[in-house]
Length: 251
Image (cartoon, rainbow, N blue to C red; front, side, top):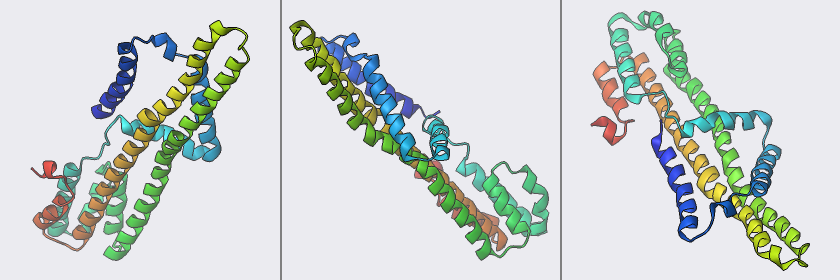
């Protein structure tokens, strides 16, 4: 799990609630189901209008990327490619055919199949880079869904506040209801600004970061496969691919 995401959410919302309590406010005053319905429902509705159904569903599926780390381990992939390079250098590229089905990563499996089938290194690179570009654009659209939600939420919150104030104006004849009515009206603004800056926008940023990490791993795989197809020394392949690792991972 990506515990930093959990810690951030707890710390962010906890600070808001804690500040409310320290100021002597009541939790009941900021827990308004009507305001929540207006802000959350309005934001989701606006996002549904903005994006297509497949993109919206993909965004929901990719949301787990913010909480869970990816399955790809760059160091494990480097070791795997280095071993494949050793086999290819010793027994030829056709000896790798029996290894293809044992590879879990679909991108590496597809690339290795191209190499074994005798595709030129340039063609192999072009095919895999096209897949990377499309995949990155496809998944970045899911991050933009949450980014859009972060843009809509504050405006929907203001809309909720205005609706609440309209209700207050309708009860001007009863001064006892004015104070609580105004307080409830502005809770919608708190929900809109709060969810935008503590949930939607940070979630979009984390998804972009995770998607970029996956792209780097795929670029690593491409370089490894090209080196493998050109018959480079396994140790040189390993040294080259180590350049894709973070400094902490290199150590």
